[in-house]
Length: 141
Length: 219
Picture 1 (spheres, rainbow over the protein chains, first blue to last red):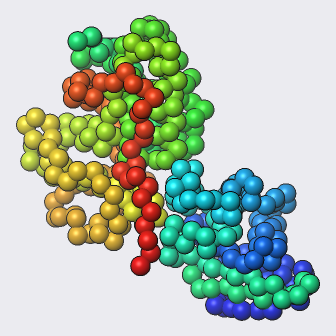
Picture 2: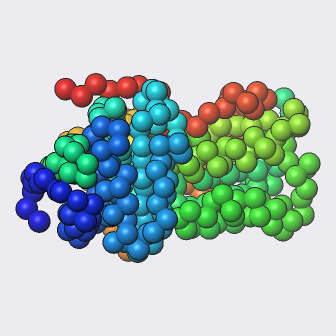
Picture 3: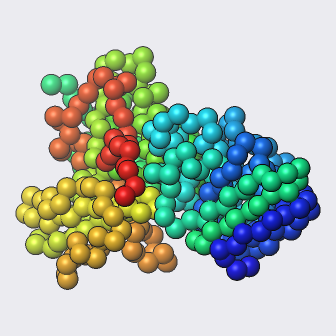
């Protein structure tokens, strides 16, 4: 997979394919920030990646703020959507989640708290075009 | 002033989960468990076994000494939560909040020749480390650089030739890292240096992460 990359996917299946390819380059300590409008498919993209790691029952962390999974790797799946102040993230030990040497961390709505994100991370933007057509941009780490 | 001993000491600032009871100036019992992610499960049973072995009841303990950080976010919360729990409803039980790096420096310095400079550097988060510098002196040690949060990139410039290095930031993974004190060192530090820190206001104690979680603005 050559990054940065910008691709228009026309179906869920194409999205899953792209997620699968991207999953193969991920390793523990990687952080992936996902941006894109409500309903653009951020959670779907993460779900598709986690399937590759053998994690099936993935739910949106919008309500819970963070979900964690353990399989071959550990996964932290954050959603900043309901966070009001950055202090709330510090208060739940956000930095400790990120510095876990065994975990890959996904962050939806990452743009809401840019100031807490490390510099060396993957950035994925998902843009709604129509129906199941999306433009997915993956930035270089 | 009330007698401090016996002191029950709790250390959970890093991977070492450690509890000790100081019985007198020169006797203590200690249990250690070096493993990630066991503290919340093991700390209370360890305290229970420790007191049993030392023929003590919790009611016999006069002081709790707790390692306050800097250190692991969750680790410090576990240690302090359990200390507060043990102290709840016992307003006569005092807590001594122990600065973790000073207790570690106290422990390390007892094994080094006078005049040695040594550093403690522990991982804090992705970009930063907890850093402090000490010198071994005739009365144990002197603080050269107070424990502080520094950028990893600054570390090289803070390290001088001849400085001995402790902590989990740069030390080889094959040995057990001396990145946090044992509980006996926490207890002994509390006994010798902690008299001014004694508090009965248990609820006001908070772990020390060396920052007030001030929001940084990205340049």
